[in-house]
Image (spheres, rainbow, N blue to C red):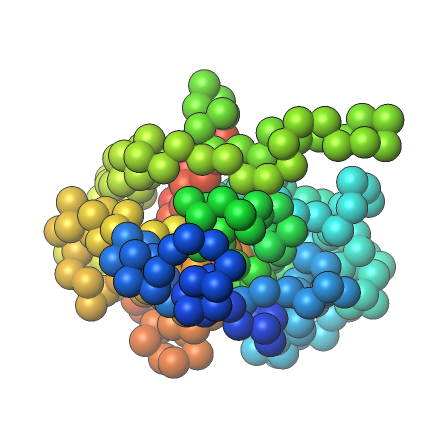
Amino acid sequence: MYSRIIGTGGYLPEKILTNQDLESMVDTSDEWIRTRTGITQRHIAAEDQMASDLALEASRKAIAASGLQPNEIDLIIVATTTPDMVFPSTACILQHKLGITNGPAFDVQAVCSGFIYALATADMFVSSGKCRNALVVGTEVYSRIIDWNDRSTCVLFGDGAGAVILTRDQQPGILSSHLHANGSYSQILAVPGNISAGKIQGKPFITMEGNTVFKFAVKVLEEAVHEALDANQMQTSDIDWLIPHQANIRIISSTAKKLGIPQEKVVITVAQHGNTSAASVPLALDIAVRDKRIQSGHNVVLEGVGGGFTWGSVLIRW
C-alpha cells in the first residue's frame, strides 16, 4: 500500500506587512530587502490568532478538497515552531476545533523542515495501514518570535498555514522520503530562550548566522533532491516541479541552478509570503495545485531545511 495526497489547503492572515511598512519601523529599504531576499510582503496574524486558528482554516480547505468528512480523519500531525501553548499540542487543539475525536494527534518540531518531517511520518502511518486518512499541517505565527528592531531577521518571516490530506491507495503517491539532522549546528539558527519559574530565560527571539545558514542550506537542499532521485532511479530531468522551503530567493535560485532545474519548474511564493517556516512548503504546494500547474502523473519534489539543523525531501507522483 501507498499514501497519496487527495486534498490541499492554505491560509494567510488578512494583515499584510509590506517592505515599505518596514521602512518606517527599522533601518532598511524595499530595494535592500528585495535584492537580498526576493521578499516584497508578508502576512501577519491578528493578536487573537494562534497557530491552531491558522491551521484550522487551511485544514478546512484541504478537507473540502479531499471530499472526506472530518470524522474520517484518523491521524493529525501538526508541524510548528510556534505552538499555541507549552501543552497540550497544537494538533490536539486543532483536532478539537475540527470536531474530530478519533485517532492520534501530535506535533512535530523540525522548524522549517517541519512539514517534510510531518509528511514523511504520516506516510509511514498510512502506507503501513496504521491509519487510513491523515491530516498534515504546517502552521506558524513567527511574528510572535521576531525582534522587530532586528533588521537582519524581521524582514524575512511571515505567518501562515498549509495542509494536506493523505489517504491509503494501491497506486504510488509518495514514492520516498529522506530525513536528516545535525545538532552540532543548533546555535546557528535558533530561538534560545525558555520559560523557567514563570519567567523567560535567555533570548526569546530568532537569532541567525545568515551566511552560514545560506551555505549550509544550498548544500543540503541539492543533496536531498539527488538522494530522492537516486532512491527512485530517476534523473533531474524527470522532475516536473520542485517545491523548496521558501526562505530566500537566493537560496532557491542557487539550489535550482546547482541541480540544473530551470526556474520555470520551481514553485516560488517567497515574494508574497516571506519565510513562513513549516508552512512554506504546503502553502506553495496548495497554490500550485489550485492554479493547476501540478497535474496527475507529475513528479514533485518537496524539500526543506531549518534550524537544528534539520533537512529532508519527499518525492511524490501526483
